[in-house]
Structure formats: C-alpha cells, structure tokens
Amino acid sequence: MNKKYLLEQCKRLQFITNDENMLWCRPVSDEWNLNHNKGHETLCNKFMEFIKFKKITNKEATKWLNLKIKKSDKIINSLDVKYKFFVHNEEMTNEENFIYSSNDGQICQALTLKNVINKKHYFSKDSYVPTDWKAKELC
Image (tube, rainbow, N blue to C red; front, side, top):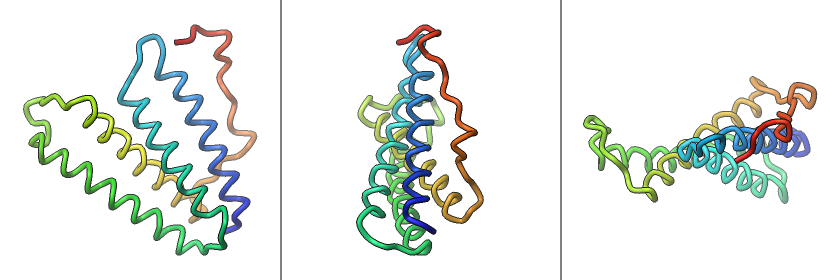
C-alpha cells in the first residue's frame, strides 16, 4: 500500500469526522458521539505519524492497528466489568464516559483503516460532499 494513498485516505476520514462533529453538537450536544469522534481523530493522527516517516508494509500497518484495537478493547472491557455490563443502567463518571466512548471510536477507526489497507473500503474524493452548515443552525 502506498504511503501517499494511506495519508490521503486518513485526511478524507478526518474531513468526514469533522463534518459529523458539526451534526453531533446541534441542537443539543451529543457527548457520546463527540467523544467517539475524538477517538477517531486520535487514532487517525497517531496512524498518520506512524506511517509518515518510514516505509511500512500492509502487514506492519495492520499489526499496528490490531495492537491499538487490543489496547482499546481491554480498556472498554475493564469499564464493562466495573459497571457490571450496565445491566442496571449504571451511570459512569464523565471522565470514564469519555474514556469509554473515545476508545470505542479508536476501535471503529482502526477497523475502517484496516478495510482501507485490505482494499475493502475506499474514500473517494467525489463521494464526500460536505454539509452546508452555514445554511443550518450551528451549535
């Protein structure tokens, strides 16, 4: 997989995430989805840094993403156990809610990037049409 191609796909993913953030902050802020998208941004930025300065193979990139998935999954599972899998609608603290949803976003983004690497998914420049937020109410 070409480094330039992966970096471009990451940039397109970031545009999509930024546009989604505008949706989730209106009319009432949806913290879970905003934090989830922060996880998208975090992983995408780390991945871009990982591939930017060295030549990597698809296998190395996939391995790196799998490690991030494992790490985030471990964090989410520990919170699930702590809150007894939310059987009785237990409330998390704001900090733990952020940790949970942002790690969920990192897993989501890692799976998307793995699909891009394996050529199962492609984000076309022409397929993304940004929302005209100036014509709509903003946060």
